[in-house]
Length: 304
Image 1 (spheres, rainbow, N blue to C red):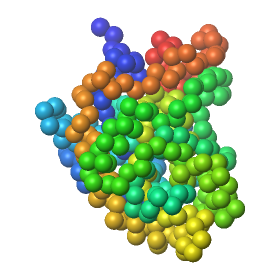
Image 2 (image 1 turned 135 degrees about the vertical axis):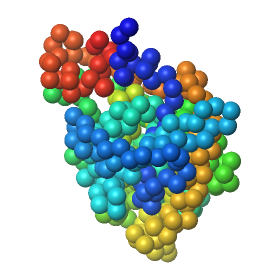
Image 3 (image 1 turned 45 degrees about the vertical axis):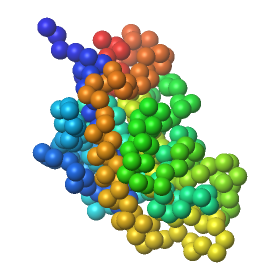
């Protein structure tokens, strides 16, 4: 009997949780039976080794999970230097079906106080020059991205954060800026005028690539500062950001643990997006052997 393609629904029937750690979250102490896994991808090297293990799930087998600090060990990568394509591809190699991004963000609203949690449902892209797609090089595809965050996963993260006693703000747009400098006051006010609630530097192209890889993606955003728009507030500093983040690391770990405990065993009960089912424009006969090999884990199950 022929084994199913590793990207096919048959091979991804079991939910596997991935967690991307942002500033301040460099390890996951809640993972059990851990091992470090180094991967190579057709798109280069990920930010570092993945920590693969299990999270307890009452009444069900332990949940397989994988963790990666996106900025690398010791926080050595700028937001614009992260190899987002490799990071997401590595999660796909590990069988991840659902991916939670834990991210530090600045608040653009008075009511979102540093230390609060936000579960955004929209993104505004202000990045420049980042590789934001697996496609090109002989293969054309156009995913739908009107709702960039997976609502079913987002709702479960929201419930987990509330259950852990966090002050949570539901929904809103996250501006993703290029960085590494923080905003000017004029930029900060412009983003507020656009209706955005928070600002960060890493959710894009992560969310786009996760969608192309057919991985559910949601963001647990930890507000650390008021950017620079708030009159009378000190401008954001790395020291202030890290001080708030250190207080929130335990909360983030607890939210992930509670989220994992409530996840079903099978993907049928919490589906990931079949984003490429009707998104590939290039005729299969026109896709070269090199492109098929490079994109096998992304589109191979549709070409088989």
